[in-house]
Image (cartoon, rainbow, N blue to C red):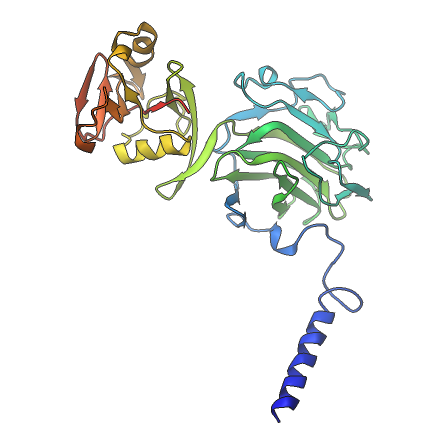
Length: 360
């Protein structure tokens, strides 16, 4: 009896597996990506090792750079955007465009297959071109408004997003995000007609090397992309929240964290105070620690210019102050320290407005 039940069980398993793919199967085995990697609902993600990339439903503070495509002339083929062209920092990535990545092929108007490592645009793929479809300049693929559009960052970013349209059918296009090795980090299919925003952000720092929009179904009038957004800096999880951080040098030994989650874009957290524990986590997110100030720093005019004086924040004029870790090697027994040049005090106030870290 036991042997009979076992044989019936094995037969049932074999029957189920035979219908996962191949003849008689309802599953589409031709897709180049694993089914579990596709995301059709906002806030869903999958974990590739320790890298977690989540979908972002709308533009927000997780994006601090913007390309509108009006920066270049109409009809520009495969535009190239160095940081100066999109208003980014000097160390920001150069952004380039083409049809698809090396390792992919075109099936109809769909870019199919897994990109090879390192992620590289294929110069033999159909071109992209800045176009005007009765709206401001956008970027389209070839054939016009039908072909795929691929984006490559010369250095990794923490987030990427864009708007695509005008879409006439549900499930007709797909937004894909890749890492530097060509691994698929996120895949989103349009869930609405008209124009839809697609976004992705990492909570483990810059891991995104490129993105792609391609037709995966019938889209009668075609599509274009506009308002490409991304983040130059680090996005990480602090106290359960996804936080976008960037920094500016004070001297070659210290950096200050920029508050890119408010409209001020300053090194001061004006909307509310940052407590010492959060300040420590911010520095750690950037791969460093709260600043260790020396006696010499207090007489360095460059250091004093970057940390002293007053700052206007949210309509208030405040004295510049920063959380630090130690002063001349003394951490006061682990008690939170605040630098308000030219003095260093030991206190645990939560109304401070700056975070000073050792340079990474």
